[in-house]
Length: 146
Length: 478
Image (cartoon, rainbow over all chains, first blue to last red):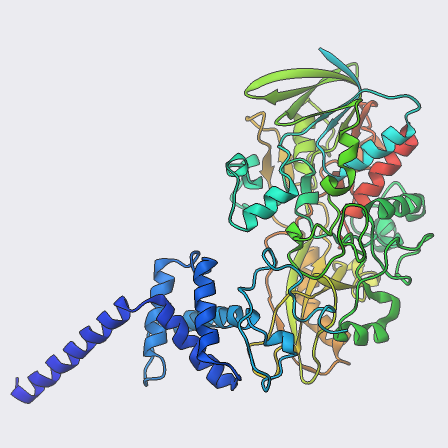
């Protein structure tokens, strides 16, 4: 094996190990933040970083991710970190489904739907969406549309 | 042995409505014993559990699946709440009436079984039951009514209004026991949309409306008492045999009423040696499936409660000779399209089909006295024929809306939560288990209540009808 090829393989291997370790040891919250930052940018929402952070704090307090298995969390973490860099990992469809679940939970926890889905209005984090803690919260009901 | 004028088995809709009428009609206080297999699990404790505070007292209650066995591999889900108040604790509160033609589908369409009573006979009891349940509903309905609904109707969504313009009385604000204004101990529904356990206690439950019946001095309510057999002599039921804390007891009654669900009512009858051909046979429930209607430029907003409307456009008609009637429910839960700008340009509709009671789907004699055994081979092809036409029927029915696409689930939900037809009513002993007054054809001091007596099940929710039947049975007998 030529020296240049050897160095190339070692470099790629080292980078992979470093990236893998980074993803493994990075928290689940980091992945959530990444997903939601990308999502709110894509939607062109008028929202500050602080609101996303408040949602993450609220979600942890409400033990929102407690029902997620270790494997589900790892899948979300790996995909969220690798996303948009030119290739995708296996189980991409499942990841998309999980991601949508998180995005939906986030949007329902903000003022977005209560503002009539108007993207020009500032969006604020309100509380974690849970009808048992906050009843009457269906933003599409007659309570919000008379 | 203790003696009672009436022994009731169970404390759900069937028993409670029977008890209400029985007490009203008794000239002097009668001694009543109610045997409930479960416990009193109050609404407040149920809410606490949803908020993460599960009381150790209620942490290990049995689930429905713990209460029966399957003989075959098809472990279809049958859902109920085996505690005080029965399925009033977990129902969604939908209370459409059956249609007059539902009572004579054999005569009209050559399928299923006719009822030994007519819609008109049941109509006054429908009115009474709607009053007790505090039903909210519209003025115009596809079924005749002699009285207005006691509560104002729910709000229609933007999509509902368009469909109602087209179909009028065939597409109505859903009649519901989710209160639209405060009534009794219940608050007004505010569209939390988790009705199986209402966060604001808006839907009718036995606990929030009829608990007082069980607190009367002449009514004894015992918990953790599972009735599993009857002592019968000379075709009269003498007593019920129940187990509590691992030991059997017996209570004697002049009149006995089985108000457990169709699985347990027939299990008790089979254990007691009831040899009627139909006892236990005909186990069925409706089958349901979802479809999503995507709109080009129509937001679906402004409706109230969890289900805003009922559609009867695919329900009654000559097609029932060939395939099932179908009831439509328009959902108002917090679904969205994950597409910017099109968030709520979508409707989520449920299509519910009637099944035909099949004699081979049944409760069979069980080795375990406390656990019924179910033998279930699946629903009738009548339902599959309706399912195979559904997409085409949806296209035809909703083509006037600005549809972008229709997305079909294509599969049935695991359950519709409505167990029916294991002790069918009939005009003669040869064709069923109970008569038109819900009295057992052979044991004339025994009432069998609930949706078990439905000779045919229709696609409509059964609770209002079974509650009305209980009122009728007690009214006619006492």
